[in-house]
Length: 151
Ligand SMILES: [Zn+2]
Image (cartoon, protein in one colour):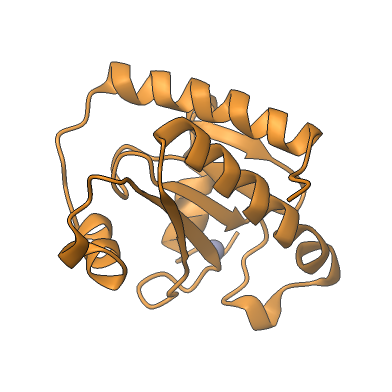
């Protein structure tokens, strides 16, 4: 862990119930204090600043982690689109945020505007609803890992 990295601190303190999937290379989680409801973080276990610093094992496993997580988010949230974004401006630790965009999102607020709004948004979230969503995401993610898309 990097002593000054907020993302390392968050990952080290995550309670089990927020972790959706974990491997030697990646930790997949949702956090009630970060991101919009339905947002899922895929974070490098090892502190790396960006894609250009991934090691071979991280590089080899990132695609599967992205695809299975996006499929789970799409299934559970009934999203029409699933956005995958990675900025690395505030926290210099590589992570991707998956954000569902549902069919009822206004057209004017889709794409980058929706991402900016949702990542900066503090919303009132129900712990009970969040826990139910996490259980559904965990279950869906497991099924997608066991049976990758054939499309
Ligand atoms: Zn870090």
